[in-house]
Image (tube, rainbow, N blue to C red; front, side):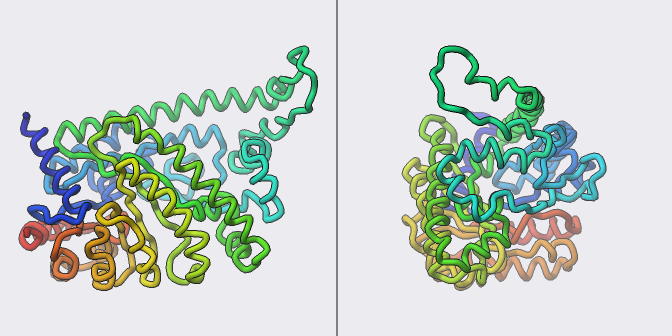
Length: 416
């Protein structure tokens, strides 16, 4: 076994021990640095879209300089060119010609109502048809050629039934899809390349899959925030929300079946939770529309021996009781603005926890602030195991001395 293989095994074991409620040799460092890495090492967030080699080399250098990390932070490369070809309407991204987004910023969501309230029945009755004829032309302004892919029932005695596919508009869209596929393949290849490089350096990946809560899929990509809020105020819409969330749950479960057949040392699926923080809905609505379909996916993953990594966003103090309703030692919860003492008390012996160190303090606070806050987190969360160190969000910028202080404090006080 090489030195790097030994380090890979040690780091993986440390993280897995903590996730499964054990007590590792020290608190694992399990945090998002992607934006900061690009800024510090001469790259930018725009390079994640347009210069994969530059962004990848920045990640390599960060891990060389900070071997205290317990996970490998491979940039999840995206093709800016593919988004340009598609005319992606829901986001603006760094590096796009004409963008107002700073090169060091992540993408910005341009939220849209891509499905009206009246279109629920159509979407539920014929999801594929709805996506082709209505959703794609709305979400990608350059892919409108699928709007007329309608079929008329007929006796198939010729190729005439295929006419919607070879209509000029459809052909132009298919041509663009070929270009998009080629560009997306380049991004996927870069992600695989740098994930392997970091693994060969001894850093296991943080996540190996991404999913979303079904309610967030409905709210983020179909109805929009204001639209889904409107639906919550109308009990006549509840059955539609139920049906949509159950359909999205089943779709996610099927999409994640690769875990059953792929041999990989890390099996974790990341769930960013967007629309369920305190105040976004009452407890009954949360249980019915948010937690129930999300838990359905979580249990399916656990059945495949996969760890759901639930990344709560915003205050989550009123939701903690729901989070206890999972098999013991099988889930990792991240918190942003939550009482960590309460989270530790509620989830101790049930699920592992991480998060809550403000990224704003890493950028603007003093070294003394950082040391004090980390020590407080360790005193609250570390006893008994089941704790991993993380920020409250993704670190975009910070004082270099604060980062050094963070690692020094964790090394000094994070051992068991």
